[in-house]
Length: 141
Image (cartoon, rainbow, N blue to C red; front, side, top):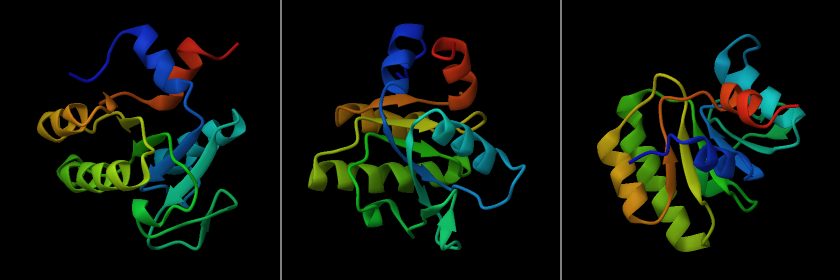
């Protein structure tokens, strides 16, 4: 089951390196503003957007497997119907690189079946929650 208790959410929020799948170049969109907020809070943001060269001053890559740095957390801003493929790619990277501890589906994004696969592989999962809201609620001073 995706985590819902504050202690487990706080543990996930303490992960530093975040690949943002669906990170947007458009100011005002949640998929831009939330990663920008996280970046301002000290998170290392790795944008995954095949239609952009850079997002938030960082080079954007076409897929999760193209992120050159170690990744602790995958934050997803894509429709629920795309989650299964993203989880599959996350698990492939997790197996190959040994990184990625958690996957976070933003508010309004759910896929219980795909997240069950991630949990079976040892990843912590969060779904249908906003990382910015939870960060402000649990960690911001």
